[in-house]
Image (tube, rainbow, N blue to C red; front, side, top):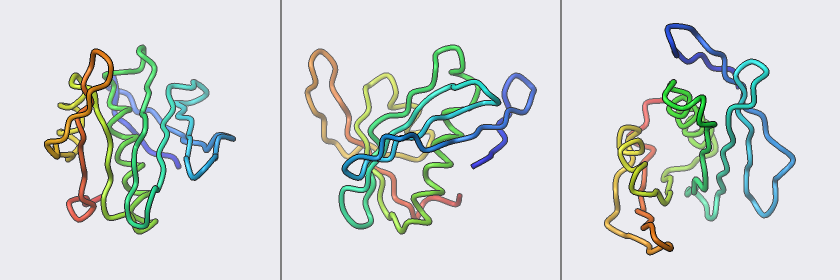
Length: 130
């Protein structure tokens, strides 16, 4: 998928490519801007109509440029075409604001995970105008 993202007053084309890691229903994708590998994301479809985002990891030197937001929008577009109606994830506290801006909401469930808590969040596809 090729999409355009505004960053530093320039347009970057993002290319997302599936990697060779497609095990037990997990979809792993690499994210490129030009030839630069800038990140990876992993998701799965654990049951019909529901998807779970395991990770979106954008390289530190590419963060803050709108790439993560664009990647999430592309993931949601892809999921919508697959008949997904709800997307779930677990977020560290420092990333909750990002996910809320993307339309995710907290369910009220919190998982203790070492020193950090993971906040369970959902996104309803009926809210996605893609």
